[in-house]
Image (tube, rainbow, N blue to C red):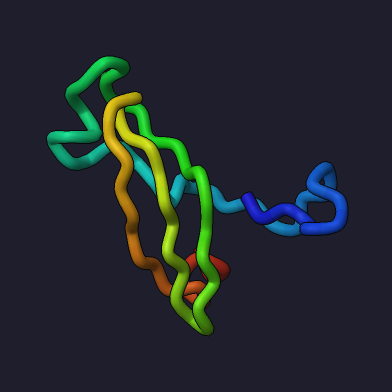
Amino acid sequence: MLLASDDPAHVIRAGHEPILTPDLDFEQEGFVANVVFPTGVVDDDDRLLIYYGASDKYTAVVELSFAEVLRA
């Protein structure tokens, strides 16, 4: 879900599928298994670095194409 920066209650666009899912072993096992949650995003031209928590035990980062996220 993409929210307006000046009004987070305003939804700009929402996808049909999640962009983060617990697929890797460390995301599926832990204190709270099968949970991933974004905590911050760095916008670098067409590249998004999404920092996220996994299984309430780990932190990680994933790199996605901003254009591909918008198309989804």
